[in-house]
Structures are given as C-alpha cells and as structure tokens.
Amino acid sequence: MAEVADASQEEAQETVRRVASQLTHRLRALLQAEAERPFYQYQPYFHDPKGASEGASVVPSPLASGPVDPLVELYFQADGASGRVTLPATELQQSEPTSTKSPRPDEQLLREAQFRRGLPTILANARGECRPDQPAAPKQAQAFGQRVEVLDSAAYQQNVGAAELYTNIKTRAPNQPQISLPAVNPAGNVEIFVGPLKWRTVNIGADPSLVALREVCTPQGSVLQGFLISPKGIASFIKTARLPAKFLPGRPQHEYQAAVNISDDPWRVAIDVTAAAIFANQQANDLRRTFLTIFSGGVAIATLAGLGVVWIVWQTERLARQRSQFAASAAHELRTPLAGLRIYSDMLADGLGDPSKSKDYAQRVAAEADRLGRVVANVLSFTRLERGMLKSQPMLGDLADVVRESVARQQPALEATGAKLETHIAAHLPAVRFDPDAVAQILQNLLDNAEKHTRQAADRTVQVSLGRENGAVTLTVRDHGPGVSNDLRGRLFEAFARGPDEDAPAGLGLGLVLVKALAEDQGAQVTYTDAPGGGAQFTVSFPA
Picture (cartoon, rainbow, N blue to C red):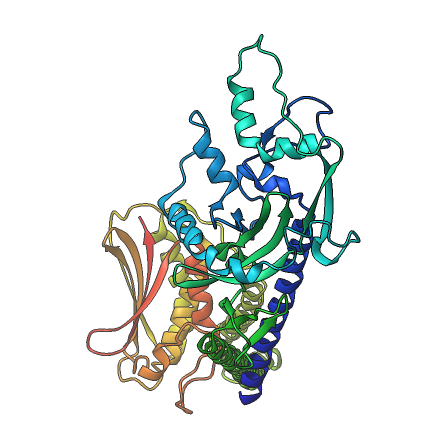
C-alpha cells in the first residue's frame, strides 16, 4: 500500500505541474491577443480610423458589451495625471439612459468599486514605458504589443472628444449640418506610443488579483489601460476531477505547488495537501478493497469449485454404490422366481413329487411367473420414468371395480406366502379420474411391499381399504409389520432407498418410486403414516 500512496503523491504532483503549465500557456496567449487591441477601444465610444473616410463617425466600443473571454472580468482605462479609472461597459451604460442592458448585480458593483480604489496605488510604478515629451518612441514592433500607432489629426481629434461627439450626433436634428471638429495638427499626423502589455498584481479589496497593464502616451498625456483577470474564470480553468486547485500569488512553497511563469510578479497553482493525502489514501483503500474483493471472490470460487468436486465425487460414489446394489438386488430378485419356476416346472415335467399336488405345483409356477413379471415391469417402468416417458391415461370411472379385480388377481399369490388379505370397499363412492393399469401397478407394488415386510410379523394381515375422506376417494394399504424406520422416512420415495437393517427383505428399491410417480401422473397424492397399533399405512388420494 505504501507504493500506492507514493504513486498517488506523484500523480498529485504531476497534476499540479500540468495545470500550472496549461494556465501559463493560456495566460500568455490571452496577453498576446489583447496586446494587439487598439488603444482607442478602451473608451466607451471611439472613432475607427479604418471606418468612415470623412465626417464625424463615433460608435460604442466593442468592450462596452463586456468581456468575451471567460478569464477576463473587466476592461479599464486610468488617467495617468488624475488617477480617474473608467470602465468601458460601465461608462457606456451610465451614459445611455435608455439602455436595455440588465442592471449589474451588487457583487459586480462591489468588485468595480474595490477595483477603482485599488488600481491608482500602482499607477506610479506602472508608468515609465513612455513619456509625454517623447511620444515618438521606437517604431519597430516589440514583444506583447509595444508599438507606435499613427492617426491623422481628424481621426485622433474624434477619439479625443468621442463621448461629446457621440452625444451631439445622437441629438442633432435631421436637417442640421454635419458636425466638424478642428484638427489638432492639420498639417500632419499624430503618433501614439503604446507600451507593452504586462502582468501586475493588484489588491482588490483584501485579495490580491492579477491584471494586465500597459501605458499609452498621447499628446494629452499618459493613460494606463488593461484588464482584470476573473477569479471565477481561473477557478473553472484549473478545476480538476478529484484534487481542488487554487491560483495564488507568490512562489511555490512545497511539492504540491507549481509556478505560473508569466511575469516578474510570481504566481502559482496550489493543490491542497490535505486533499492530496486524502486522494492518496482513497486510492490505497480502493486498491485494498479491490484486492480483497478479488481475493475473496477467488477464495469463494475455489471453495465452491472444491465443494463441487467433492459433491461430484460423492455423487459418483453414491451412484456407483446404488448401481452395484441394484445389480445385486436385481440378480437376487430375478434368481429367486427363476429358481422356483425351474423346480416346479421340472417336477411337473418329470412327474416328481406328490401327484395329488400337481395343481399346487402349477399354481406355484404361475405365482413365480407373476413375481418375475413384477420385477421386470418395475425395471421397465423405472427406465421409462428416468427418460420422462412414464405416462398414464386417466379417465373418469368406478375405482372400486378396478381395486376388486386387482386384489382378486394378486390374492392367491399373497396367501400362498402365508399372508392374509382383507378388502374393505365403501359403498356409493363417486366416480374419479384414474388409469386402470396404473392403479393395478400401484396396488401390486404396495401389496408386494406389505408381504415382504410382514414375513417376521405375528399378524400377517394386509388390509386394502377404499373409502372417502376430505372430499377425495382414498385407497389405503395397511400392514401389521415393523413400519418404516425414522432414518428412512425422509427418502422413502427415492430410487434405491433401503433401510440400514441387513435382515430387511431383498428388493430393488423401485416400488415406492413408481407408486409416487404413477399416482401424481393421475393427479393423485400418496402419503405414508404409521398405522394405529403399529405397522405401515400408505394412502393414495384421488380428487373426487
């Protein structure tokens, strides 16, 4: 961070040097342009020698409308002998009662009054470029406008009496003859020495200000002309984005100040040291925040990426375990009915066993075939579910008939295992929308689960109920086994979900997944609750 603070300090120092250099060039260009202005334009009215060729011709000064350059606050002319200060714009507005110019604000009036009081104090020091007894100064052009202007006597006389002449022109009658003025020197021209335009420091009120001054020598005496630099214009020019700058008299006092090289009177641009330090600290803090943001973001991304990798590895291992478990369960589920089919079919084919039990053997073959069919049907249904192709076709009908038929078809196989099946179907149930094949598969899986999990129970009764509850027709399958353990309830309807008990009946872990999917595809809902007195109870609710 120390390097950032040092860099910010160097940036502040470079900023003040750059601003001072730009202001130096700007003020020099302004001084050079204004130095070419003719001396007679500093009067409220003047006669342009390049205008009318004969007769009286006086017009308002171009300075009467106020400064055009934003760095100039006002133009002025001071009489070297009397010390009287005139401002072209102010004098013109005072002499024009019908002027449409808007009145000047109090702040401007105060500045003008302060300027009039402050300027005469430097008149004595400013004069000396020319003397009334030597009007014909060097005629070659000098730096910043030092020159000799030559006017014919008539043009010069009109400029001398410009204000009076302008009033006479404005007030004379239309048929009155044109005004003529006697020439100062009818036999020759008048030479006016215009001194170079230079920068000076003047106190306006309590504040030092920068003015440009030049001395003009005429046959009537010496006058001082120039303009005052606007503090607001300077402040706007040197304004920077984040570091406040000021234009002050004097030489630079530290590294956050730079000289404005325009004259012998020293001026400087200064940047507030406190602001520069705040700027440096702000940049350091910005860098610190940026670093912390990037670093924290990187750590967060790396953490998320690490967690993602851990999750992917965990998911991969879980899927691998499930795949292995499914393969083992599927092999077991398929091997058991296939073994039964082979044994009983061989006994029938070879005439083995008790001939009086041939019918029983045939029923066993049919039961094992049904069991094998259920396993295959569940696997196929699950694959369709995974591909989003497990669809039912519900239609309005009598659910009781389908339940009776499904229970009757599965009852022999269940009772052959030692289970007892009871059916309770309420009368006058309303018609509901359902898919008969889907309902048969739901009942098949619920009854198969009930039979498996009650093999060690004292009461192997499985109850199938069809009734009406809370505006819905409910299909309930209840057993009297151990029920569902607490650690399995949260994932009861997930694929391959099995309890931790190693003695639990074998299975694929797909039955309840299919029950839930088939029920919801028909618009029904399946729930599990502990049966009163113990056991598991699954309820499928069909909207009536």
